[in-house]
Structure formats: C-alpha cells, structure tokens
Image (cartoon, rainbow, N blue to C red; front, side, top):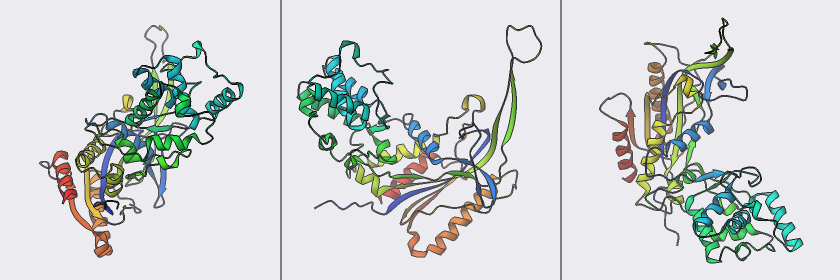
Length: 391
C-alpha cells in the first residue's frame, strides 16, 4: 500500500512586497519593460517565468543544491558522462545520440538511415565536443538531473557502450526503454539536493510522459501595486580617441520604478511526493527554496541599473487548502513618502478580509511577518517556517 502523504493539501504562501528604483527587470520583444493593465490602469509587470528563472539560478548560491541540466544538447551531456566512464569519443557520441534521437526528429532520421543502410553515419571527424551546439541538439529543451544522466551513462557502461544493446534501432518506441531506465523520477535524495529545481518547477516530456514531474512551486506575475508609466532614458557614449566634439553613439532605453506585489505558493504535498517522501532532506529543500526566493532578482540590465533590492515586506503563511492570491485591483496612492507603506497596509487588510470570508476553509497553521521587526531576519523566518511545517 502506498504510504500516505502527510503534507497533502498543505502549502507555504509568500505575499511579498519588493520596491525597485530605476530598473528594467523584464523586457518584451522590443526591449521595453513589461506592463499589464490591472484595475483600469497600467502596472509594471515581471513575468512568472522570469522570476522563476532567477530563483532557479539563485539556488546555486545558497549551497547544498545541484541544479539539473536544462538544454537542447542532452546528447552531448550523456556522451560526456560516458567518456568519464571510459568510452571513446565515437562510442560516447553514439550513446548520446541514441538518447537524443528520442527527442530529436533529425537525430532519429540519422538512426533510421543507419538501420536501413546497415551502417551508422559517424566517422572520426564527427566526434563529439562540449561546444558542438548546432548539429547535435534536441528539438526541445530537455530537463534532466545529474543522477539521471549518470544512470543512463552507467547503463551504457554495463553494455560496453554498445548503444544498440540499450536502445536498439529496431525499437519503435525507444521512449518506453528510457522510462524504464530512469523510472519515476525521485529527486533530492542526497545532501546535494540533486535535481531539486525539477521538483520545484516541474518537467514535461511529451515523448516520455511518465517522466513528467508536477511543479511544486507556483509563481504569479509580479505586478506593481500602483499605476506606472514607463520612462525613457537618453544616453550617449564618447570615443576615447576621437578629437571631434560630440558623442560617438546615442541611444534610448525605457525603464520604470515600482513597488511589486509577488505571490508564490509552495505545494508541500507535491514536493514531498516528488522527493520520495524523504524526511531527511525535506527541510533542507524548503530552506534552499526560501533562501533563493529571498536573494533572486531578474538579471536584465543589472550592469547598468543595479536593481539588487531584497524584500521590503512579506506575509508568509503555512496553510491548508487552496491558495489565496491578492489582486491589488485598486491601485494604491503614494503616501508616507511612497507606495510601500500603503501597499503593506493593503496586504494586511486584504489577507485579513480573505481569512474572515474563508472561515474554516482558510486553514491557517502559522503566520509570519517579515520586514517590520529588524531583529527578525530571513534566518529566523526560515527556522519558523520549517518548525511550523514539521508540526
């Protein structure tokens, strides 16, 4: 009988206010800061995908996390893993492409041609390299943990790096073999939390759906709590060696300044299931996520605008039941020196109202307020959340 998930229907919710001065955190296709019309006025916006990427990259800086690989070059990664186990260049390339052919139509055509002609279409000049980025890539981005890559490499090693013994060319559905070799993915079972980013942000593989992983973390689009109008900066650049007066280059770019409301929810039941009900490393995974969430800032134009601002305020709840996001449908008005203070009051008021209206369905276990008491640091918040989750 399957073990009951003790975290089912339990979540951590983050209601974050974060103010930025002159920035362009997330640009559209013409380089303009993204916006959205909410409550009849234009708001600054940072897409959920943008901030998720920033959080995933920040996880490298918090320690104890080994990120999965998200790439079209999955064949190269598997080939490199095979070479570390003793495969020669050509055998490693064949092993890598035998997996890549599951995801790449072009690679599959090579395999089918090789089967038809009785020979494999490789020679010494076609040996793999880590920067071989154009003629060896999947049709879509593939998300794999290091343990999964190494598991495949070890399977090839067991078969003397003969790819046909693992993925025969006659096999019409090689994805079924891949599914059996990797199995239902289990992540974060080591002290390096390998593949925790897959467990948090999910994975979909259309060619091998049993390898899909449901995301445990959900991010809303961050929106400004107030009306925003993008502004234009005119800039020039001078030539160090020119004797002529005037600039050598002129240009414009758009920016804005805003106090953002961010909503993130972490489904503890889903995360616990994906991690294989692992009690030992579950608290470590929660800590790594909160730390990354705290320090992560989108990377756009940081060298020229340096928008490295952490949370100004946050309400963090450990709850049971459906997520509760705030809409900020009515934009706040600047007061007490800016937009932050009225935004804090709006978060408190809206959450209090939601709790009253939801009654017993709100399911609050514990609530934390960050940013008011200077003696309550992010470390205190993390320990408090972990304790509430455990209880």
